[in-house]
Length: 156
Image 1 (cartoon, rainbow, N blue to C red):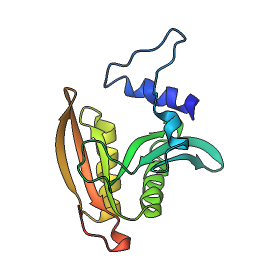
Image 2 (tube, rainbow, N blue to C red):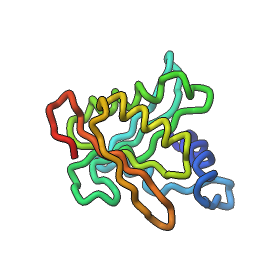
Image 3 (cartoon, rainbow, N blue to C red):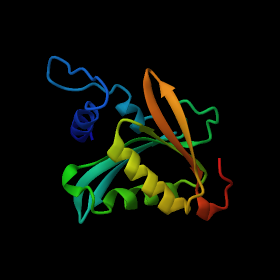
């Protein structure tokens, strides 16, 4: 996971200024919490038996008042597996695994991610979601809010 995270952060550094340490690595101090905190869930994404990425879920969402909302904290698909449906399938499987209200936070400047999440959420919810614009640390974000429709929950 740590090695994949370096690739993820390298890709993300296109949109935010990230510093590397003296060993040439990006820092993400809360990664270890995904194996310690019962409200955090790390998963690898596989395609045809090969490692293709990861998804990190947490129950306590950033900038969301309701702490019963599941948050797609981090999501990454290796470039060689993108545009093959693996990301959308992985997101849908993840959402099915955790019934309830969800938020997906996407940096507005990351246009490919915005497009991906719009279509993934639209396809999953049949259009039953809302988008909130948030400014955090001088960056503009889109928050996609929805509920797991197969579990009969109401839209958040």
